[in-house]
Each structure stands twice: as structure tokens, then as C-alpha cells.
Length: 521
Image (cartoon, rainbow, N blue to C red; front, side):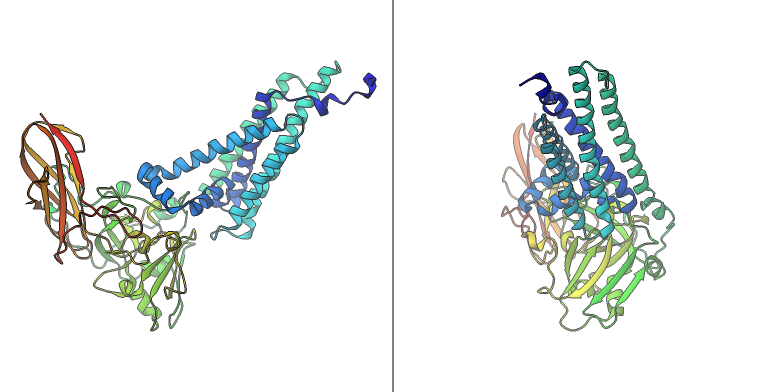
């Protein structure tokens, strides 16, 4: 073969491994930035990165979700996003290395990413068909930038082999830097566009929510915060948050509508003004997540302001045979609440629009959410609620029912030790311990504690606010030096003593006695 017949350097020259990996990662950045930019126009959740993350949450086995909540708490979503980022970077780098001779392997991997993004966006119930423009833009940008960077590198390589003037090494590096800067600018622009439609400004314009019926004042002895218990009312910033929303839904009051339909005499559609203009009621309610382990943190108390759910449902006219209030969030999440609980005026179920003297925080459901005392949140506390369907249990299955959780979920009687902390070292002698107990909609009658499996002793209880809220407790022991264990248990007003049988959270809430170890010297 003569030199004239040798293959073109641009077609055969291998890209160095590190350069090839970098080209793959740069293409990924361009793809994600382009998708995020277009999502700023068509809906924040259309960002392929977020859409795939939301899809991953929906497909994750319930045991793994429960583990993530237990292990990472409110950071579980951040861990998921970071994990996705690491995987995508590694796969993109590997795709770049596999494309050292040909653009095809990398282009195929980017196309697969794009198709996954399109499917994830198309499956989102809160997005319209136009939202698929975001993952399509991501796919085109990724393939285009990858092919362009490779072509630029090979043009330089060919020119060097033929001793001709071509793109310099500096120009190739500048092209890569340009991709990084461009991706950053596009991503930032997408974030700004999405932020222009966020709910914060809408919430700020709501103003004061003045209830026609206020909750009774919280007595001074409703907590033992000076001793180490939580304050009776949980500040909004500290109120627990457990949900499936990877990005907090942004719903403005001017866009929000609540549709009530199904087994009703007349379908209702309410806007925010319709709800706000009704006589508002304020109630003090403790809420608990079913994911709360024994001794866990996912229990909080707030003053909620809203309207009686029973009033709305009665206005619609619930037909005989209705069993389930099937509620839907703006992001497609669903919950099923017993109709009987929603209609029970003694229970006080609410469509809440305020929390602790201000409009609902965005992350806690603004503009409106459900609050049904006495039931775990996954069957009673739909945030960003936009639809209420009166139906039967057989006709509709809510989000968590298909993932192994129970249909009905009354909150179990529980108690928790807040001080001392586990494995803490304290001076020997008088040791004060304390914590909280809850038995929503039944009420806490007593809390008992024991030291080193000795006899149960009754603790001092705080003033009861109502049967739907927690109660604080404290007790003192004379403790000699050494290693010790303390346990607590609550008794509700029906006479039921908290069980010592240890069970996990699935399918309807954890049971067992909270026990900690500590040392005195």
C-alpha cells in the first residue's frame, strides 16, 4: 500500500483516553444544560435530570425508600441526585473512551440518555405534551456537542500529521472551556426562567389569614422546652418533611384550582379566593409520618388554618356507597383517605392554607393541602392538592398502596426519649429524663419510664392541648455510677398501652419501646 492509499488520520487516530473521557463528560454537561434551559420555558419538572430522578423515586422498591428515609432523612433526595450525577458522569466518560476511534458508541449512549429522558418526561402527570421538547433539546445538544468536539480534535490531529496549519491545542481547550461556560449559562438561565414562575412571590402576596374560629391559646405548661423537649409548636422551618417530590412543586394562587368530583351530586371547582373567602378555622394538630421509626423525628405540631373538609364534601353531596376520598397532588402523587374520616366533623379534617400564622410554606404544600388528624400522612396529608375524587377502595389505588403499605393507617400510640441522648455520659446521682408522646385523636393519658428493666414509674405530663396533639413528659431517677438503659411507654385515653413488640414501619407504622443507653460517673 502506498502512502497515498493510507487511511485518513482523522478517521483512525485514537483520541487519548483522558481526552476522550473529558469529551464525553462535556457532552453530558451540554445535554443537561440544554434540557434545563428549555424546561425553564415548558415546566421545571421537564428538566431531564429531574424527570429521570422523579421516575427513579417512583420505581424504587419500598424497602430501599424506607432505608433512604431512615438513613439520610430529609437529605434522601439530595443523595439520589448526587448518586445520579456520579453515575451519569462515569457512564459519559466511559462512552467517550469507547468512542476513541468512532463517534458512534458515544452518540448511541447519549441517544439512550435522551430517550430515557423523553420517556420520563412523557410519563409525568403534571406536564403537557410540549414538555418533551426539553429532553429532545438535551438529546440534540449532547450528540451535537460530542460530534463537534471530536471533529475539532481530529482536525487538529490530521493537520499535525500532514504538517499543515490547523486548530491549535489552545483552541481545542478553549472550545472545551466554552462548552463548560455555555452549559453553566444555559443551566442558570433555565433556573432563572423557572424561578420567574415560582410560588414564593405568590405566597408573599397572600397576606394575613385571619380565622373566624381561632384555636385555643397554647398554655405555658404545654411543653418542657426549658428541660430539653421540643417546643410545643414546631417552627415551620423545623417541621418534618417526607414526600416524593424531587423538586418542590411551584403552584401560584392565581393558577391553583381544586376539583371535587366522582360520587357526588354536583362537581365543584374552587379557586384560591373561593377557599380564602370562606370562614376559616384554626386547629392545633400533631402530624406523624408512617416512615417514623420508634424514637424517630418525623412528628411535628402546628396551628393549621383552613376550611372544614366536611363542608366542601357536603356541598358537593357525597353519594351513598362512597368509601374513599382519593386526593391528587399537582405532581401526580395520590392518597386515599376514608370518606368517613373526612366527613367526621368531630375529627376536624381540613383543607389547610395556613400554618403557624402564615400561608403554608411552599415545601409544605402551598397553596393548599389536606390535614386529617389521627391518620398517618400517606393517607391523609396530600400537599399541593388539586383534585379530590369521591370513590370506592376498589375503583382507585393510591400511590403507596401499590408499594406494600396498608389501606388504612391510624396513627399508633408512641413515645420518645429526647433527653438524655443515647450514649451520653452524665454525673451520677439525680438524672432527669424527658421526651414526648402522641396518640392522635385518642389522646395521651399517661407516660411511664423504667430504669434498667426495673419497675415502671409514672412520669410528669405536660398540660394537654387537645386529643390530636402530642404531650411532653419528664421524670427523675437516682442513678448510681455505671452503664444504664431507660425505656418509655405511653398509654392512650382508651386504656391501650403502647406495645413493646418491635416492628418496622411497613405496612402501617412502627411499634416498640424507645430505649436508650447512657453512662453515669
